[in-house]
Image 1 (spheres, rainbow, N blue to C red):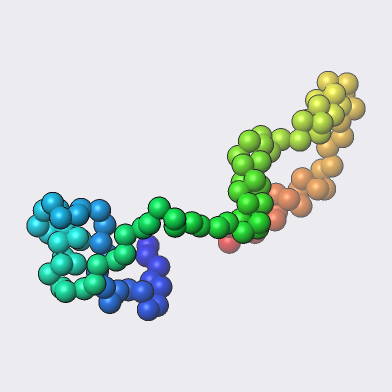
Image 2 (image 1 turned 60 degrees about the horizontal axis):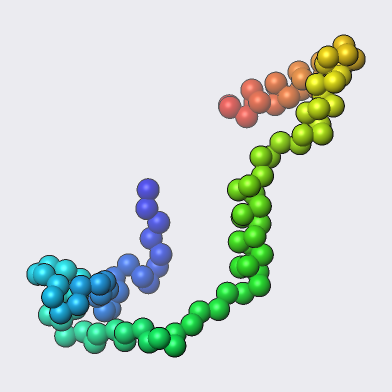
Length: 107
């Protein structure tokens, strides 16, 4: 499956990746020199990038999700206690409704 982004399928200047003057034939760097395309500016030591506060928050959320087990331990303990005590009640109507809903999703 591929997604095509309009306007970006054929760049006007070739992509130059790594290589340098000693790059062998057939590399992107060599292709750039044969098409007379201007060479991209080399990054300087003073180049910087900034990250928005939203991006920082998203990164923190991603880390929290990765570290989370996704299990509600208190609810699990409560259910285990009810089952062990014989007090857990199964709602048959709810189970039947959810089974039918699951069956209908597949059609």
